[in-house]
Length: 498
Ligand SMILES: NC(=O)c1ccc[n+]([C@@H]2O[C@H](COP(=O)([O-])OP(=O)(O)OC[C@H]3O[C@@H](n4cnc5c(N)ncnc54)[C@H](O)[C@@H]3O)[C@@H](O)[C@H]2O)c1
Ligand SMILES: *[C@@H]1O[C@H](CO)[C@@H](O)[C@H](O)[C@H]1NC(C)=O
Ligand SMILES: [Fe+2]
Image 1: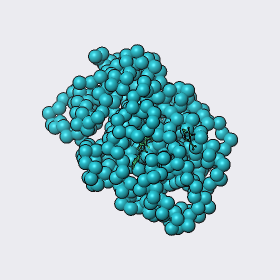
Image 2: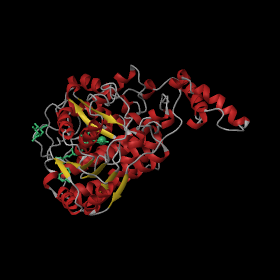
Image 3: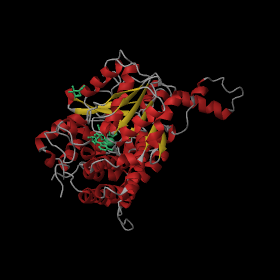
Image 4: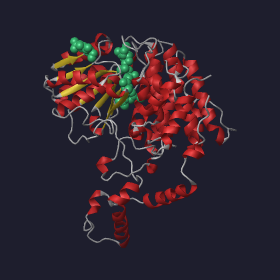
């Protein structure tokens, strides 16, 4: 097994660290807020304000802007309603919105199950007019999303209701986006460099999301993910305007989830929590956007996301094994739904990094693996499986950037860290994650059991490099030539584990 690149080789030199520290000190002074950009805004400027204005005007020039680090973060999340039976309230919500025609989006499985029965009853009771699109494809591809959009364009709806897992909620977000911008080419809003990264500058139609997995947290985020078939990798659209208006989180909808779906959607939660908790701090993200509206949703770890991410991690470690191993444990299912939503708020504002960035080519280049317990008639590496499979390698690599945080994460897995050495943080957390995956059961022990070999690694690295939006949030990823080498080591290390 190839050793990971020592972190000293991928970290900036001491000199550049010192300059970067200096810059942090300089740039963490709050620059003028937009209303202050008018120097006459303060009728009687104090000398301090005047000084700040002068100084900050300098920082705001485009040249400095490209070098400057971020100084602010923003917290966005959907409203959430949580409780057993709340699905029955959705008719009331849509009626209050005054909708004339709702597009209900679901997949063929959920369409026949309890969550959709509840939705149909509730809409009928409130006299809400609706049409159902029930052909969402699991782990959607651009092709299936385009079919859904084409269908929606012909329907003239004024609102959306997504009932399902991440596949459904994400497809509904894209149906909403591309019916609002009916003439936009499909790649327009997709993350650069695979797409054009056009910002969403209009409000979309109201979308209410009813998650049936625990889960992607997609009910709280502005992210929609799909597989771009031409590139054999997942990508997506990420903008706050895609966020659902309301997430209706009903633990009763979790009961029909097959145990394999509980496990993989729960591992997604685990990685959302771990990755957002260990992402670079928002104050280290470069460049500071030229305009506050261009601040990305994935900002780096911040004091508010930390609260959500660490809490979600602790709940997932405690309740996921129970939810997977005992189908009658309603408390565990309910706690997992809560953890998924909490993690969604955390990573939706902080971002995810390497497990997710590396998972996108893993699922897009699936050599033919069918995950046990998934009732779909196509090869599928479920999203949660594809993120968790590299987690032991990833956190071993990121630990030296912030040993305390990685040890705190290990502690969340029940490891006694009282006498742990900082330099062992990576090994300790990596072992804790491997043990957790082992005990959960039915998880591939690396990329080899999924059908990958060392000859696939170059392609996997090529598919990860364009995932800049997420990988730049990883400590140790610098955006330069070194990244290729780092990613190669990480994939090699993830090929098999003990
Ligand atoms: N938007 C985001 O921020 C975000 C975050 C993480 C993942 N994702 C994406 O979400 C997708 C994965 O979503 P997911 O893990 O929620 O699962 P999913 O929507 O892909 O569903 C998985 C399977 O479980 C079934 N299922 C779902 N809920 C069920 C229930 N209550 N009862 C019975 N069967 C049920 C579905 O029919 C499907 O067969 C991936 O495409 C992934 O890339 C998005
Ligand atoms: C449902 O989606 C699949 C895959 O995208 C497609 O092949 C099929 O034609 C669709 N069925 C209907 C009824 O639209
Ligand atoms: Fe995810």
